[in-house]
Length: 186
Image (cartoon, rainbow, N blue to C red; front, side, top):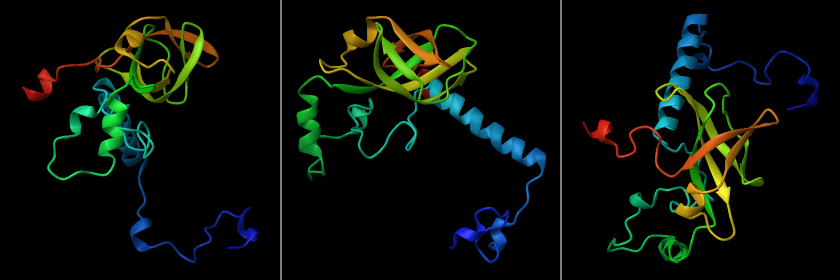
């Protein structure tokens, strides 16, 4: 590929594949976008993690709050088992938390700074407006050298910085909507 095509409006490919030439009407594009926004809103309310947004290959299941999905008593050892067992023996210094804004107006998207008692402790990984709760919800990674314990999460003053303005928030480990999954199992 040469640099000469950079300013043009054509693709460096000779022609697109037939399956990619499907055109979308405005209505179809709007419906597709609406489904994606709805899905994100509902998953954030239940604190369902999204690979690539909230989780990556460098995050452990324990840090992400997914320890319940790891079976340590399997007959066959799995890669990383010993590392996870060692990590679980001491307080986790990094965790994925759920944040619910007190103010229903501002919107969370991603990468907003997270403050605890005036100290920058992390960033929002993904956020959306929770229509069931009537306010924005975010999943964010928080670091603290002494451990991100339950007491650390429930104490202190939490704020999320949105457009250079700090907004009060509530931090928690459980999903804000149906934390015991009673509605999911009904």
